[in-house]
Length: 255
Length: 174
Image 1: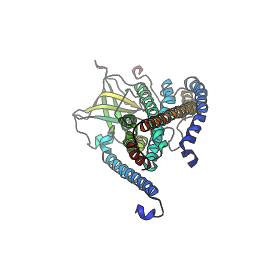
Image 2 (image 1 turned 180 degrees about the vertical axis):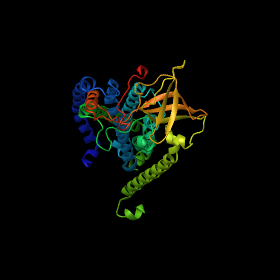
Image 3 (image 1 turned 180 degrees about the horizontal axis):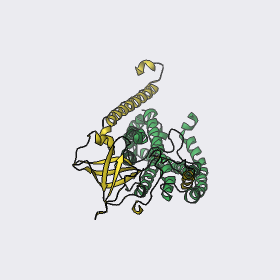
Image 4 (image 1 turned 90 degrees about the horizontal axis):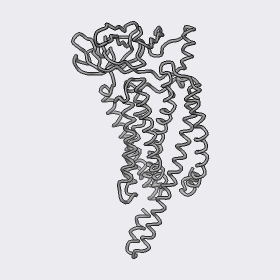
């Protein structure tokens, strides 16, 4: 595990998984779409509307997974000052925000024909909207300062504080009475769904997850390059300036 | 406490351990606070009241609230007034509330189906709804499988319990 804590080695691994994840995402997508839109049966009460599920559910799971990753990275950064933690949290935030938005939009489009409304303020929908705001708030806070490094800490604290929302989303449909139904996949007696509906969900879920990993690896490389660029620029500035600024900079570095 | 546990550690590692405890402790208190707030607000965050709660007098006449429950079998009636209103009974198998609604019903609306209606009680205990939403459960089923089960007589509608097999998809045709 510690072997991968080395940023350089981690980035090499991240670069190597990129073609594989992209390949898996592109390979699974047409198969999953065929299964979801054509091969799988219509639901007995929702008919063809049920097919939105095959996009809505993977997006919801990945949005929450992205948040957990963001909070874990932030915790690693705050506690162990590990630079990879901060970089991965910054890299995953916009991805999570977009998946969260996909979940909310497909949910609204699905809600209109089945429930009769695009949006209600029930506990599940509201907590999911809060998740989107947490992603946006994290990005805003992390990039609010002229010196990007100053945004690391407040953004990391926000990400960790916001993790309490994840169990709230999960248990909102059990703890409160909501318009949103309870969990199909993680219900007590196993998935409340026949295999011919689980197959497209698994295929598209796998495709989305692979795409998520690919995006994450690409964005991580970008964040990594950004920090290196900043360090090189900082080095140039220090070299040009007289020696007086050097001790304070190195003192900050060893803290 | 942290110092006694980490006596052999270097200052840097001791600081890391302190930060770990700070984050974990902070999260524990935060989770406790959020848990207490949500538990305290549980009665206010409810999306709807059930018929039993209405029968227990939890809501006053005239106050707008959401009523949730199952549409009782055989309770759907169309008096045929000028506004095309429908009457039906919402039940939770313990108490019942009669509902009047003039407007578009969602596709999933039918007897035995879970619904959530927004409206208020009039003086006589009739719930006058402004909006009716359909609620469905977490069970998904291929339509063909349900048809086969109905032919075999083994089908039970998920929310309605036994004996609510008749879907009645087009209420206006009844």
